[in-house]
Image 1 (cartoon, rainbow, N blue to C red):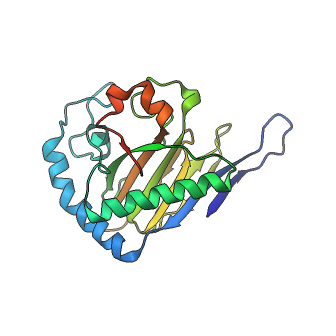
Image 2 (image 1 turned 135 degrees about the vertical axis):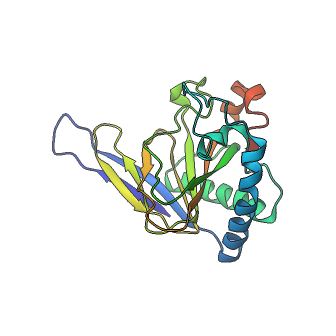
Length: 225
């Protein structure tokens, strides 16, 4: 279902905006399988990715322990594990429903996904996904992004107005999938729980965007079907 983030204005020079965030729920049995898959996968991600590679848009290597910054080196959705196959089908169904709710014609889409870990005392700082991974595509092609809460407790994702420093929070609940426009700046609150917060983030692009730079996107994005 659509959750509308309404940023009100009481000024004639500040536009009001409503940002739709689509929220759906994974089946519990697949959530447990997805959690186990991710826990098993994380050590191999650290082993198989290069901590010294600089992510697009960055000027220095990320901290060696920071899983998020390795995300552009692999696609967690390019996997035939039962839980990932289910998740891809769920994301595709949610995408079609999101389009329908917003009177948008759905297109063939490709997805890139990566895992995020937030141990106790850490958070994800404000950012957006407008550059669609590599930063080469025109910003006017910015499409959709999302987040899958795999193991979260007492945290929120904050979404920012594109005009002023106004924020709207949405509670993170394990098993929830959130889809929102890629241009929207977002961040998380600090994880104050003993358990590490685990989420799976993803970007969605259309076939048109994919074909603009297919040599780059081949291997980092997979078709959802």
